[in-house]
Amino acid sequence: MDDVDAVQAQIARNMLTSGDWVTARLDGVIYLEKAPLIYWMIAGCYKLLGVSDWVARLPVALSAIALCLLTALFGAWAFGKRAGLFAGLSLSTCAGLFLFTRIQIPDVMLTATTALAMWAFLRALDEHEVHPRLWAVTMAVCLGLGLLLKSLIGALFPIGAGALYLLVTGQFLAARTWRRLRPFSGALIVLLIAVPWHVMAAIRNPPVFDFTMHSAPGEYHGFLWFFFINEQLLRFLNLRYPRDYNTVPRVWFWLFHFVWLFPWSVYLPATARLSYRPLDRAGRTRLLALCWTGFVLVFFTFSTTQEYYSMPCYPALALLLGSAIATGGKWIRGGTRVLCAITAIAGIVCFTLAVAVWNYPAPGDISRVLNTTGNYTLSLGHMADLTLPSLAYLRVPLLVAAFALLIGAAGTLRIDARREFVAIALMMVLFFQAARMALVVFDPYMSSRPLADAMLHSPPGKLIVDHHYYTFSSVFFYTGENALLLNGRRNNLVYGSYAPGAPDVFIDDAEFARLWQAAQRYYVVAEDKTLPRFRTLAGNALVIAARSGGKMLLTNHPLPGPAQ
Image (cartoon, rainbow, N blue to C red; front, side, top):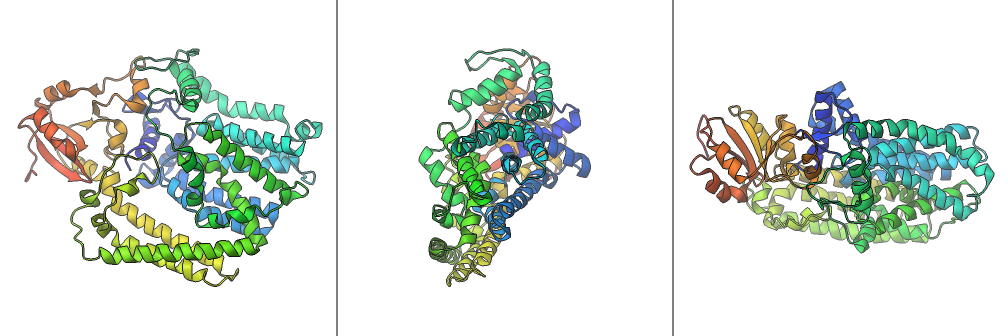
């Protein structure tokens, strides 16, 4: 897809082809915003299996599987096999994990390192553990990897949650605690893992030391300043430049967890009935899960945030859910009744909508009938784009979703612990399939792959991309080419564009008009709604080579065969 999805895949490809595994680049411009481990993982998969979109998704997919297995094992160790099964099941079939692993972001990997660090923390402290040193080393390795995945919060979350747990249990000042956690040798391991890349990135992208607290356009202060001060501190304070991000309102940030953990979130009230006294392994794990969740959520309450930022606490909530479900009781039975009502109503609504639009025409792709709002602060912001005619393109996904939800309603209609949770899991597996089918329908709208394919099957020419790199990022991935960016010196590429030796890839309207009249063939990718503007800029030298998903590919010379 366009935006961050193809950006991550293309950065990894650029690293592989250039041989520079230290500095990320987009269109030749240095890109210093993110830690590199996800790029290295994707590039490693490219090296083994070749460059393709499905290969680019392997690290995220495998990390999600590993996270769910890890959560199940953690739960089994803490509460028993049945609770561990429910913990892994609730995480693997919750809406949030599915939704936030459809895009190439490292948060699921960070969640896995955080979860393993938390388990290692408890096992290192467990007086019955026969290998506490091994678990202390495991925790340190996870902290180091977390730093290479998501920078400071990769270490901050486990350390903060662990410190809060030690304070609550009165173990923070105990000498035995630190003998078992081995903080000095652990710190050395963390530094050995994380420091080399930071040092090399700083040396290759000077100046090395710049501590200004001012962030403004046209300024370049090197890697360390941008990566730590601008991206971490100033972003936390909402003072970062460029201001190319939004933040979710705090109330929604908290309440949306009932959506992200659905359908298992109906059992969250039952977790309040659990014992959090650290008298045994189960109690200690529940208390740690509470500290873990609280630290992450409170941290982002005081920072700019997106919904998926809280993913590192999903395993903690899954552990509590697994423990509560295995314990049973009236709160679990009540949650099942609530879920039965929700799924029955949702299933009927989906079926009614599918029937209502069954005879609606569905020509072309879905972009023709969407109400594009442009307000995508929330992850589900595109839901506001849907209109009744657009649902005609989603008839089959709606029917599959209705079938899935009604299976869930039927399976939970009678309270039977032997089948109700199986029915819930089956419901979500089918519902995810419906969501995947819907994503296929949205592909022309959310990806520019058809335009890239059209260009690859057309005479060679130089590519120009209108507006920002992210807007049509999949064109770069599928064509394997760099491009000129028309009025695109903005957002994520602004800072790198002022670095010494930055490539001259940014052009304005006047330069575009001059290039467009040249003998060389050029292509430009732009949104359909900008066609009048391009007619003004290009005059008669304008040929529409392809259209898809509300976007178009234009060229300045006639093409073989009929032009559009």
